[in-house]
Image 1 (cartoon, rainbow, N blue to C red):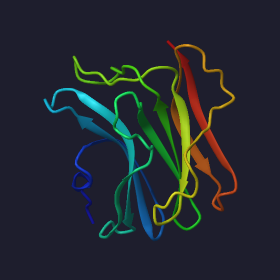
Image 2 (cartoon, rainbow, N blue to C red):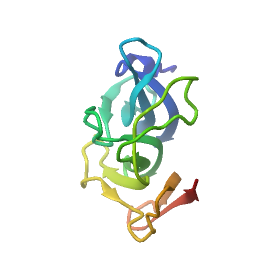
Image 3 (tube, helix red, strand yellow):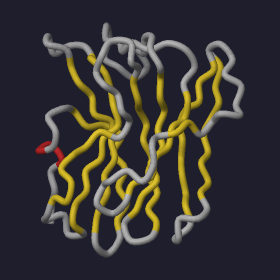
Image 4 (spheres, rainbow, N blue to C red):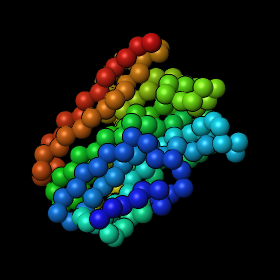
Length: 173
């Protein structure tokens, strides 16, 4: 079965990551919203789509994971990674930026606002897409020096969900 993610929700989808078991497929990605002129980013957020194992049935058609509310200054989220455990449960990690300006990898003349050091966030979801906990910051012990970025997270989890390993890169510009 071929599945086209463009049907859910109506924004560009970048950096997709997929995990599957015998009963379902999870897709996490960055949702990128464009401004009214169509030539600059309005923000990015982390989304998920939950499908049946054959991708023929949508279990959960696209929901925001990162809690970004779309208001100016509320920050942005990007670079999601996902690990599956148990019967279709997942652990999702992503980069979160509070507010300021981001230009890396964007078209010339485009930018996204963010400020301050980035952080790595995490949240667990059950097999239906219901959050098992609130999103929480993973890198609390890392020094948040001026200009420091916590970037490129990755995650692995035991099959029973009792042990997880989350890694990331700390970068200073």
